Amino acid sequence: MHVRPLAGVAVWLAWVILPVFAADGTEYHIKMVDQTPAPKEVPEPVRKLLGERCVQLLGAKDDLLAEMWFRKDMPVKATEAQINNGLTYAEVPETTLFGVIRFPKQFTDYRKQKIPAGVYTLRLANQPMDGDHMGTAPYSEFLLLTPAADDKKPDTMEAKKLHEMSGKTTGGHPGVLLLFPGTGAGAMPKLEKKEENHWVLFFLLDTKAGAKKAVLPVGLTLIGVSSSA
Image (cartoon, rainbow, N blue to C red; front, side, top):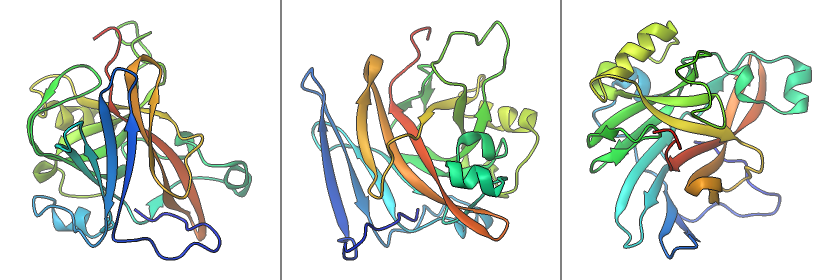
C-alpha cells in the first residue's frame, strides 16, 4: 500500500501504532509494519502486485486479529473529471483485487459468519439489488474474502465466479467485509469507530487510470456486523 506523504514529513518510521478506544472500554488499534512481504500462501502473480507495508489490527490485549497487504497500483476506469472530483468505488471495476488479509485465528465477517484462520484475497463486489439483501447494510459495496491459494490470477472475473470462490470461505454465502465511503481518509491510515460499533480502517490506495495516477479513499470495516445478521 502506498500512502502519500504530507509536505515536509520525513520518511515513516518502520512501524507506527495508532490506538483507538471504544466507549465500552474495548480497545482496537492498528500498527503499520514496513518491509513485510505478503504470506507465502499468496500465489506469485498476486503477491508481486502487493506492497510490503503490512497493516495489523490488534485487540485490547495487543492480540493480533488481522494483517493486511494492499496493492501498490490499482487499475481504475475514470475520466479526468472523475479523477479531479475524487475517485469512488464506482470507478473500480467489480471483482477488482484490492489486496490480501490474514487471520491468525477465527474471525467474524459482516454477516456474522465464522471465517477460519488463514489467508484470503480481497475483491470488490456490489450487493445484489434484490429482496434478500435490501436493508442489510448501510452501503452496497463490499470486499469479498476468497482463500488465497484458490485465487491464482489478479485479473477481474465474472461476479458469479467470485461469489462461488468466496463461498468456499464459509461453505455457503461469500465471506464479506463492508466498505464505508472513504471520506476522511488521509496520508496516514487510521481506525475509526462508527455507528453501530463498526470499526473502519480508512486509507488511500494509489491507482492508475490509463497513464494518469490518482488515489482512492477506502473505508474497510474490520469489526462490526449487520443488524440483520
